[in-house]
Length: 103
Image (tube, rainbow, N blue to C red):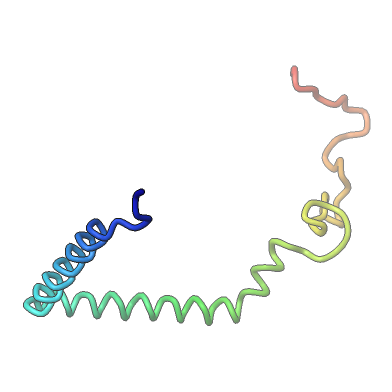
């Protein structure tokens, strides 16, 4: 009967991972430019996430209301089909014939 876990495979995988990590750390410590670039990019990333968070707190409700209007009728339960001050067929003269898809 075969064992449920292949410990030889797991041991090889763990050894490979440990050698990769140790090589990465030794290379990392030897290269100051790489560390400086990483710190700058990490700082920029964290600053961007914080700025997005605060901007969403301030402008989030406004942006949300632009896409999900409250009210009755229309798509999404609130977007009106026609602007309230315009009629649905504005610009079409009463005597004009309607065009079909063939014209």
